[in-house]
Image (cartoon, rainbow, N blue to C red; front, side, top):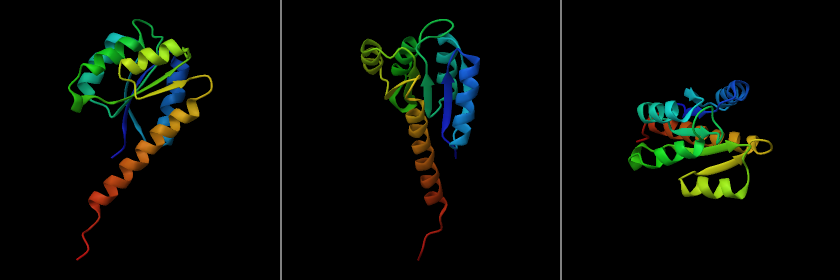
Length: 137
């Protein structure tokens, strides 16, 4: 089973490229929002494995999304990956306080973010293959 990713990104162009990259590394994009309210509702309903969040959104902020995710029951919280052009230390610190697992600068660290999702996808595939493998007697 593929890693399920929800994208919170207000740029249609960036969203499209992120969606392509997620598919290339074996992840499945299960939803997308360009505002905080829609994202929060959908994340609670869809329960993705990973959420990739921009800080600047059409309405609200990615920091608000992080805060709301952090209030979900622990077993429902996805891995939270911030990918943003707002790369100052203040944003990094705020995102970490609000539960971000990873923080990447969109202008230069997108490949590292893709590598994180690729690693999660690979681990999920290995676990799935192990679970399906017949027992050796």
